[in-house]
Image 1 (spheres, rainbow, N blue to C red):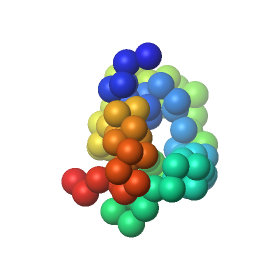
Image 2 (image 1 turned 180 degrees about the vertical axis):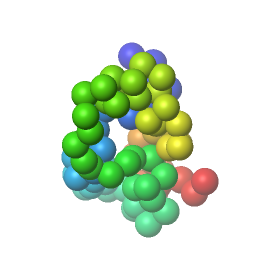
Image 3 (image 1 turned 135 degrees about the vertical axis):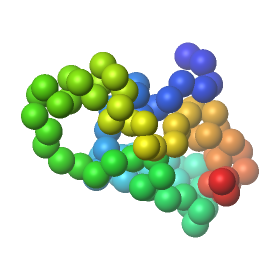
Image 4 (image 1 turned 180 degrees about the horizontal axis):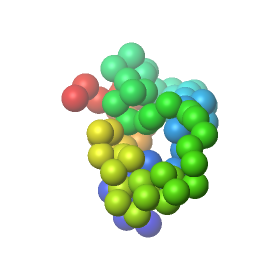
Length: 86
């Protein structure tokens, strides 16, 4: 796997699942998440109709407003023990 794929597009999680994933990441690697903003990377949890979900997936428009979160971001944060300021 390349170190720069966009995790939001590959993992397709939002809301509570994304929060739980990032909290587990911080615990596991001892990362200070003070500068992390969930809303910068992930959307809210919610049920969307199948047509909107498919359209968003095909056009990637549902992710357009979020910054990409990459494996490289996670590796850097784990190495420095701090979420990077952006």
